[in-house]
Amino acid sequence: MVKPEEMAPILRRALGYPYATPDSSYLYRDGTAEELPDDLDLEGRLSLLAYGANAAPEALAYKLASLPGEEMPVLRAELESFDVVYSAHVSLYGAVPATLQESPGTTAPVFVVFPSPGQLELLTAYELNYDLVALNGASCRLEDGTAVEEPAAYRSIHGCLSLDGSEVALAAVRSAGRSLPELDEPALLERVRARLEPELTLEEFVRACVERGGIRPLRIDAAPPGR
Image: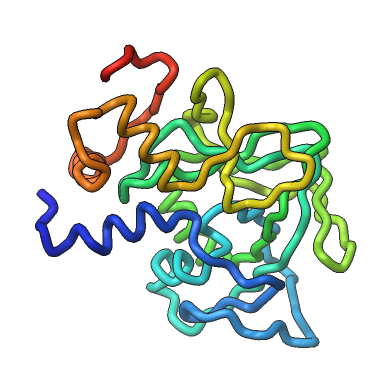
């Protein structure tokens, strides 16, 4: 059971998704964004797309806490013909997180992170609702124009959330050429709550999701009105 004094940080975490990211590439270390060194070395590191919380220092600090002092390059990039949409599940911490969806004509602003093997193991341990896959044929370029060939990405095993017959893009991710409707996390969670648990307040709904370990899968269009 979630204690009353625990709800404020839980609600803040749920509604704050996908969290703040720097405006430019950076070097992650111990929850902070530092300037990239001139002699940046990516040798032996996997190129991994970060389109949701995995580009945010706040989230990385939580996931990589057991590797203090270890740095990780986080580079701005653009991913063509994809958009960042909501996944069809509610996470353990009460947010509806992101996944990728093919979207011709759309260019999504993303990051590419370059974790060490140890960092990759920790990141993957938190992605229980995702498969780590290669985006074969994807066109991804860093902000200096360098192409990233077949980057790896976490993609939801539950697919994309469907709301009123359409996937829903994250308003926090300002994709160019977007064709999908968009909502921010508080508005999306409110729509989910009203559809599934209309008798609960938003805070009560988030609490219930956390206490039950999330919702997997989340099928809104298939749910009858009032439930």
